[in-house]
Amino acid sequence: MAQTTIEIRTNGQGLYELTDRAESFVRDAGADTGLLTVFVRHTSCSLLIQENADPDVRRDLEAFMRRLVPPADDPAMSYLTHRLEGPDDMPAHIKAALTLVSLSIPVTGGRLALGTWQGIYLFEHRTAPHRRQVVLHLGP
Image (cartoon, rainbow, N blue to C red; front, side):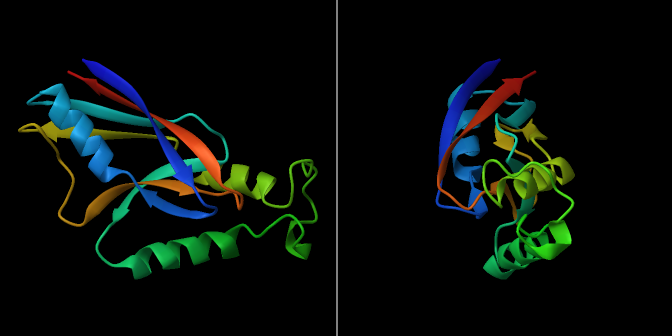
């Protein structure tokens, strides 16, 4: 078993790949098989496994989430009451609730069992830069 916490610095909304850091952690742990749990310690960002080959996929996902959950100052969001932290905060919580804050990835042959085009991403839902903590836990 091994565990570490990594920091992801974001520059606003978007997808930030952390696959290399997760692979490095698994390699350094020396485990042949196991299960990697990836957990983000925040309520206004999330995690996902998504294509890492074509950047258009990431752009389209970001655009879709903006359309699905616009900022709180958009007339469509007038029902929101939590507005103390700006027009991006409550929408960020909604986006995080619709996605995942934890992922489980099998480890096989000392490597993450990701598909050819899959990458691990932190999905930042806030517009301001943040320092996000992601816990990597490798278990049997």
